[in-house]
Length: 461
Image (cartoon, rainbow, N blue to C red; front, side, top):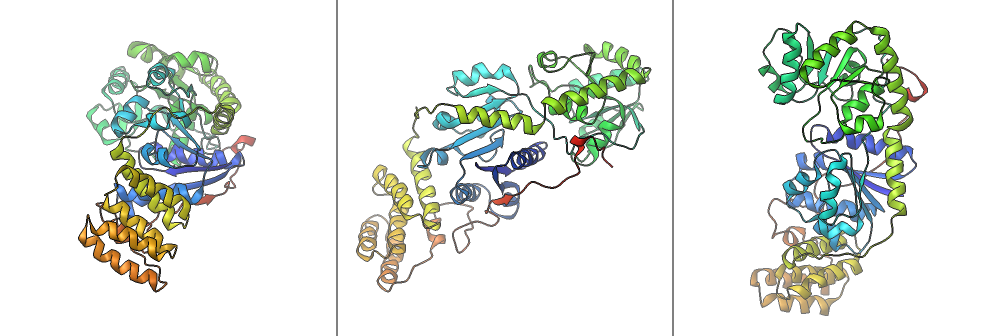
């Protein structure tokens, strides 16, 4: 299967997308990765990023787009493309808030949109919104990255890795007041917890430092973010994959996915947390027994390879359903125009014509569509057709019509005119290159990386 995925900005998102990419490669799929982070840093954002995303889809021709949350998905453009493909979002955040924040109508792709949510509490609301292909799927770990350390020593008695919230700070302060030292790694807001027993180390690199912290802490804490209503965060799976001992608060999923007391330990509130920390600090053999059992459990069931295999199997078996909603004319015009231009730059002229004519049918006097159709005719060497579109253009935009006349002259002379600056002229913040693309747009075909296999029981150096 040809799969397109992304690299995107964020705190956890880039790391999870990298894990998804590696697992898909290991499963034998042809995986293309488009680096949205690089595009946004080296090129224009806004419509420039949209142009890059459309170009990436058209050039890589994926059967499926797989992403974390909804990174890289712009539903309006996907909805007007003639090719039917599958779209997969694996949500680790509140999907409803994600949709609200993006202010995009994802219902227009609901017929091909497969949502996998690691918190089952959100599923009823998603289905009420029309996302019938919404499924519970707990998260996972990358055992090639998160694996036991062979340093053979504990540097920390109690540690927590994660961003600051007041809820988390209250729990850690309770430990500090009980004369328990806690080593904290995360964002600068942790300096608010001013206590000598709270040692703040700053942020930790997710792919290099965090696995070592998990392996080399006697007790790893999980204090779940409030937005996770029933589910477990990725921290749980990563700690156990490092053969770390985990002490976590209660969520419904913990008893469904693990066996408390065998693979991890539970606490109920700050007072119980203090009691449990003291209990387990004094019992190293019990900690090791539970850590080893937790390691076995995540390797057997909760790797990215396990979960993505299950996701793609479910997507492959899903019956086709027809689209149930359409784009409003205003959104459709922009989407048809931009996708038409992308098909044009990749010389898919029949597809470009269908998109541009589709927009023209909705707005016969839209000058950008008329210019696009004139340029398309120029690329195909159709002089009379190009002249006809320019004549129509002259009735609505004299400036573009003057350029159109030059275009017709070039067509008669057998010259293909590259005019992407003009074609994208109606958009702000788009710096098109001579071929119509923006810098850094091209998806890269990736191969499975050869790594020392922690799955074979080899500890991390």
